[in-house]
Length: 378
Image 1 (tube, rainbow, N blue to C red):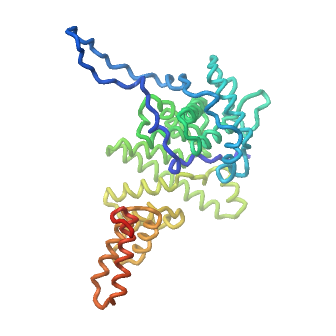
Image 2: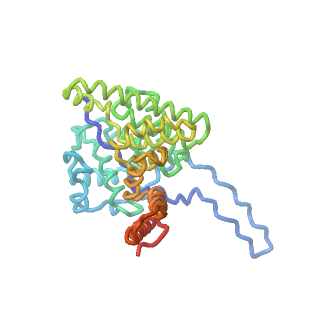
């Protein structure tokens, strides 16, 4: 039986550590006018570093690994489903990894790490499972807020990517895509790894839908007609695969369970896919396609951004529009709250309102405006 896919890092929920990283070696400092009469030497632009520069630089040490109480607190469900990895295993894996990375002996990654082990325990030949390190990286990303721990996370993901560990490839590429740095040298391994996964459906089977989604998001960021066309192709392929798997699973609970275990219907970034494809449809004036996609998924996924986008595509007289706007607004979508405030304020013009009703509606409008950040709630 194929191993159960482990959760990818939910980057939509995570702090993006890349915004905190400053690669000083790749920064050009401004020229300073000399106070002498000797002409200042010309500053030469430095060549962009090779992709391996970043994996060979160690910007963390043992002190950046939190103590056991940290892991006892955070290496628990729901982040670690069914306690697949123990707190002690996460801690020990990180300590060994940092020691090996610091020593940086030639070929240490292949000798001491396993990309195929599906158990969190050290393998019989003494290798650290990337399965365990990936969980540890996710926990550090969420809860450890030191520069060293963030560098450790990216180093683990980069190492996993070079060894072909699919979850690491996807998470590192997602970090690069969300930070707008996917085309930078430090993410070259992730970009290349993602391209290989897209081209090899068998190798990425357990994560095929997320692979297609991430590749599409990367294409959208290029922002050309051709890249957007490619993104639509990738996303529509993902939706067809998902629908086909759902139909096949409808044959019975046993078959459905088998489909889930094989990873065919495992789609963690489905919400991102729906939002991205819907927006493209809207931009291309294919509003009916966008409505159909959102109406078939928005309630199931229950995402405020999806609710808001769906609401904007409905007629003002449609009662579903007001319902979706309010669902989005109470979840903090400012534009939705702003629209609800506007609608509520507009209702003050209705004839026959009592003084009490008019005042109550004004208070409600002010509260929605406050949620939108437009007006303080008194």
